[in-house]
Length: 578
Image (cartoon, rainbow, N blue to C red; front, top):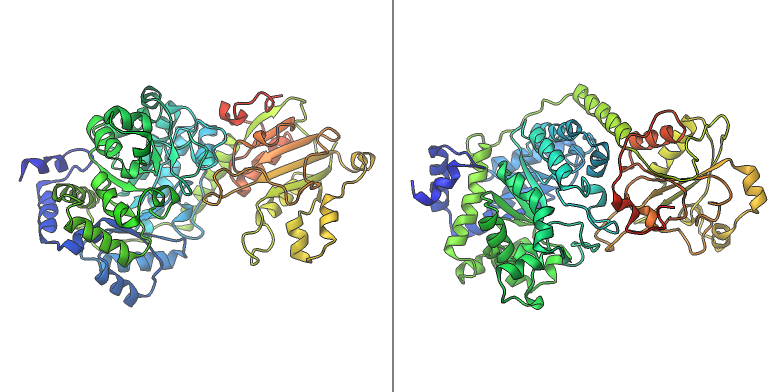
């Protein structure tokens, strides 16, 4: 065995010599096309066996990710990808909130912000264990989680509810527990988004975002998290389309601002900081290559091979598979990707596959999870929601509101506009109404312009959404107002803000000083930035029945608030606190 292969016997690979020989021999037997294709993880939409077989013959890729599908379809597809791959592939899923994205109907456990508010590592561990179990059930062997971004900018909505919070020590505690849970099953974890999102308030899906921390600040926050996870054996890291100018310039003083590139293209960050300074020996994968933060850097023909040459080992997704594969092959043939760098990337890829034992059990998947297990995870979801829902603000002591003494509720539900004309109704709003009524309230629901237009497109809808009753009438009609906010999504705008369905809408809290008003967020934690006038505000962290029920029951005084918030909820403003 060559000396340079010895690291595959060590953390995080822990291979036996026979496994290293498989890695060596496999790489030696690969054609240039096979080597180039092995660098890709692609998004799969093929279910028919003949199409899967044909695709893998044309493009012998290193891994796949797929869109949320029925459980049976996922299992069959993954079995086919193992069956027809010459080298067993990675099969990846996003398990940021538990295994809910592995297949339709899989359990949702909790958002990372919810786990951060609850603050119990045992719950993070259970979220990881659920993810690992459900992944292995259908043949998934890699989860692109946990997210370990240190959330420092209260105006950022890209990672907001997807981050454990602003405390590096708590992030380490929860991410370690999550990883330990996943590792109860032979599934890889991937910490993301190196070098750290949550500092800029812009979305790397749309633009290269910038982590503008100093080297010292980074070492104490994001760097601290990554270093400790690396030291504990972290297998894979996802590089974001996020720049870190301070370290780039420290490691290469000749760089100007115009030379700064995102981590995915930065030798300084990948090879200088992550590999050399921090000692990471595992696999580096890019974040999605169709994101604006990468597209905006250079022509795709250049960036495809340069991502690998910079230090990434795998390239996530393709703009056009035939075109991108040709770009990668050309990059190899022209020497943009050096022989040494290509060899290293393939060693990391195959070494991690051997770490999973994929070379010994190709085609392996199993179906062992039962309805009983799913019920167990549903119970965990409820327990976490009870421990996480947070009373951020109650300066006028509106909480608790007793439904027997104050039964008459007016509900304003603020959410995004429908994305297509096919979108009818709002199941989250329906759950809110059901849970308010379940708690004993009499609910009168305000209609948004979207809902009016869904029923009937009419010029009369605009004056209707702007119309407000007299103050006297409103105060006589309602004891309390609930304004429930479910703004969601990213990759459409850089920061998702509270929006009303029309200008001068009756949804704007004109009633806040007239009737006790309680705000509840079902997603982002930073809505006080747009709703500072609210005197009572609750963060519920997720649009699930468990979180909605917990928030309403706690508002009604049926159970205590247990969750903790951090200072990012104030968005750096004094007026959000009063």
